Image (cartoon, rainbow, N blue to C red; front, side, top):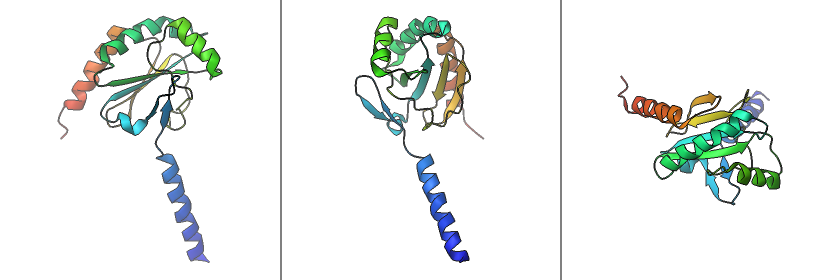
Length: 161
């Protein structure tokens, strides 16, 4: 009986580890699908916004500019509508607000283990190894993001003793 319990516990823990490490799949509004693991080697930003959030709306042009500067290099950036509006409503808002970076159809917070999002706008930054490196709350500018990335990249390149 003890051996049977140990087997069940081992199987359940294996199932939990497999589920927890499952690869998040991003599908954008254009139907493009990307696995999170395919983004390894790039910095990944997940930016949460809502149409009722004035600061979110104000930062969109800034994030657009930052994205345009880095999209062909070492960066992947995705927008997520915090309110999880129906796809048609999201698409209208994306056009109206001129969001130029890919917008995800579904919120990846659970798969990426982001926890509670306690304010908007919120930007989650994953390092090139796929680990959550930083969470930014509040509006961002091109300047603040550029400065932050210079700092993050230089700390990644420092030798560790």
